[in-house]
Each structure stands twice: as C-alpha cells, then as structure tokens.
Length: 306
Length: 312
Image (cartoon, rainbow over all chains, first blue to last red; front, side, top):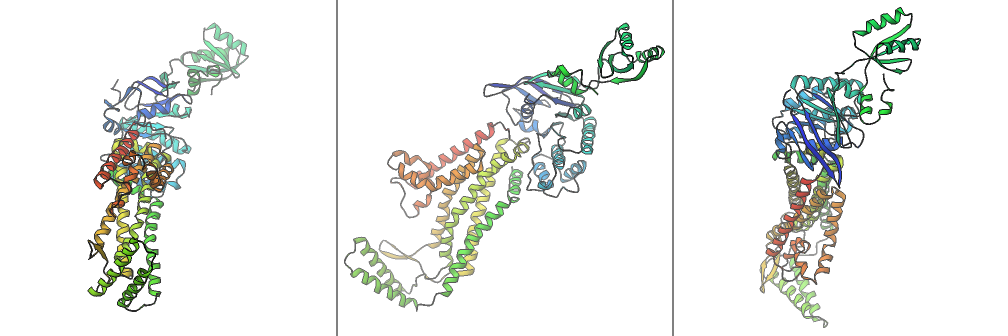
C-alpha cells in the first residue's frame, strides 16, 4: 500500500478533566474516500477540529504529508482543504470576493483558478451576488469552492451535503470521486446521512465515546446473503437446515447466507419440490445496519433491512 | 502579510457601519461649521476693531474699580487692559471672527469620535469573526494565528489613522472654504511680554497628544474583544473606563499606586497646559507607563488568541 497522506497518532483531547478523544490512530491514503461516523457526541467534530489546527491536541500528533501539524503548521495546513460544519462566509461580500479573500491566504492561487473552481461548483451565474442572498445549497457549493481553491491533497468535509438538492448531492459525490481517483486526493467525510456515506466512501471509520471502534471497507462484503421468499415456509426452512445454511426469518421469507454458485441449485430444488417461489435476491446489509450493530444499537440490527 | 491586511481592509469597507462612521465624522465637522458661518453672517457689524478694543479697555477699567476683587481677578483685568493697549499700539487686531485655525482647534475635539470609532472597529474585528463562525475559515489557512491577529491589529490602526486624516483634511477644507485664513493675530503673554501665539504648532501638538488616548483605548478594546470574543463588552468596557477614568484616578490619587495605572497617563493632553492630573509625573514617565501597558495588552491578546481552541 502507498504511504498514508494523513496520520493521526495517539490523538487525545482532554477538556476540563473529561477525555473526549482517546488515543485515536487513523491512517488516510491518497485517492481514498473515508467516511467518518459516530453517534452524536462521539467526538467527530473535536477530531476534525484537531486535524485542521482549530484545536490543540492534549496528546498525540496529526501528521499531514509527513509534516506534523503542530510543529509545521503553515506548511502542513497548506495541503488541506476544509469545510467545518456549515461553511460560514462573509455574508456582506459577494461570493467572488469571498473566494478572492481566501485565495490571497494561499500561495499560487490565480484569478483563473478561482474562475475554474467557480465553474466546477456551478456558481458562475450568482458568484458576484452577495452571499447573504444565497440559499444553503449555494453556500455549500461556495464552501466546497473555497476548500478546493489551492488544490489540496487532503480534503476534510464535515456534513458536506447538508442543504444540497438531490442533483447537487449526486454532482458533489461524482466530483469527490473524480478528484479522488484522478488527482489522488484523500477525502475524509463526516456525515449523518449513512446512505450518502455508503454511496460515496471506500471505507468508514467509526468512533464512539472518543474511541475508534471500527474501520472497514464498505464494498467488499466477505460473505453474501440472499433473500428468499417462498411458500410454504416450513419446507423452505427444512431445505436450508438440510444444507447447513445460516438463515433468519425476515418479513415473508428468509435471509440466508450462501454462495452465489449455490443459487441455481436452490431455485431448481424449490421449483421441483413444487414450492411457490416468489423471490430470490441478493441481500446486503446496509451501512445503517452495520452502524447500529457497531455502536450498540444491536437489537434492531438484523430486523431492519431493505 | 500585506495580503492579509488587504483582506481585512476589504472586509472592513464592505460593512455598512464603516461608511456610516466616516459619514458621521464628516457631518460633525460640516454641521457646526455651517451653523457658525450662518450666525456670523447674520451678526451686525459693531464698528471698527479699534473702537471695540477701546470699549473693552473701558469695561475692564470699570471692573478694576470695584472693590471686591481678589488678587487673581485684578491681575486678569490688568492683563486684559495691557493686551488691548498692545493691540492698539501695534496695529494687531484680535481674531474676532472664526478662522481656519480657530475652526480646526474646535474640530480637533472631534478626535474623541475618531477614537470611539476606532475602538468600535478594534472591538469587533476579531470578535465578529467568532460570532459569525468565519474564524474557522480564516484559521484553517497557511497563515499562522499570530500573522492573522497582527493583520487585524494593523488594519485597525490603519483605519484609525485614516479617520484621523479625514478629521484633519475635512476640517481644513471646510474651514478654508467657510472662514478663510483669517486676519487677526492671536497673542499670549510670555514672561511679561506679548508674543504671537504659535497656533499651528499648538494644534499639531494637540493632534499628537490626542494619540495617547487613541492608542491605549484601541489596544484595550482589541484586548477585550479578542479575549472575550464579545464586541459589545469590549466597546462598553472601554467607554466606561474612558468616562470614569478621571474619577478612578481621583479616587486613587491618595495612594502611590495611581502613578502606575494607565488611566492616569492615557490623556496626554494634560501636558498641553503644563499641568498634570497627578503631581510629580512627567511626560517621559507617562510615556514609559503607557508603553509598558501597551505591551502587556498585546501579550495577553496574542497568547489567548494563539492558544485558544476554536469551537465557534
């Protein structure tokens, strides 16, 4: 694997005797989109604030492209693009002036680059109007624009799709995928919209009570599940038992763990046995299920599915 | 750094309040000027200046004749008579009507307003970034916090100096247009001799000395604004101290400590007339005390701003 672009090493934060973040270790790689999940109050925002230099860690380090954020702040942060919560802009100025303002704080951001970014986020028509006239979605787009101005190698986004319309969310997702794959940007997204994270990310990091409790890839499920609906049910369950499949009842049918190759054999058998077959379809545990399972909402983990 | 100041300057002028301040500053110069002019034109001529001086001598002599005068009063009237006689003998008319110089020495009082507006700017330039949440955007840039704060401080002073300049220039233009250079001669008694008063030097000196209060108030407001992140607290506290400063100094004047409080020194115009609020202090001493406090204010502002966890 390539070198990680961002490393959190034993990151801890104690405020007023309360340890909010406990020994967090996370590596983020170029070209990868990592989702950052956790229940409310888990410490997501605190972690993100430490990664952007807004808060100082009590212990541990944030290393960006080989440089410690604490010791080489200016150089390290110049590789980072940030949207922390709602992108707060200077409402009394136009969108363009806002971008100009932030561009001046970076090296080598030309006027052409500003235009280019404005086009990318689709704000050309309104960019010279005051930000106070913008909708939330437009502010999000402007927020994304300011984060991308200096071509960061690492993008931190806190609730980025909040307020975007469906088309905007889709566009945003495609865009993130594009810069991740084409420019090798590493993206770190925190969001409450689990379905969104599921569509957008390659892997997720889950924290709870300030501790990293899981880090997993999203799209590679180890084993596959199928949803089978047929009548009468007793005969179906008997067949599963006979083949030693793991299964659970769900809705009108069963969710069963089996290999893809076994599916034709199963359907043939059911049809030949005269059982009425209504559906056999791949069944994926949603991220929501996994999330609730991981964070202790386990009692409803299996019952809630597509 | 220059770009940061450019940014702050741009943000400052995109706020309506900034333009309102400048407009008000111009108005408080323009309106009294117009009113003065209006009444001067209306007032009827009282005869030549020689006649007026003669009359003044007469009145003053009558006053001297009365018996209930203290030594001081006597000296005052005698000086006035001597002054009038000197004017008649040397053909030096008094400055009866308003002139450019008298108008400017009047408008130099409006420097209080310059200080107030600079205090408002100093108080809000840091705290407003926190209250709108834009501080997050500002501090996640490749510019150290020290640089960001410095740019804000410098911009505040730049704005203050700009207002200072507006005061001087607008007064000069308005004064010149309405009253002209003036024909009279201002006299004052030095060692028993009448000499022409150095009006312009005095005025320049006044502008310079007003800078003491201007700098200290601005730094104090900047301190409170960046430490407590509340512009209203900063403005309120600074104004409170500037109003009650005299009282606090009076109250403390019994104790030695009064010499080491910046409020005793911040009004440098006390040295203009030679005296000072508290005995035994000199200008260099005042300047030293002020410098120490200024550095202290800055150290507190910078350390809290740089160490702060931004949660806005």
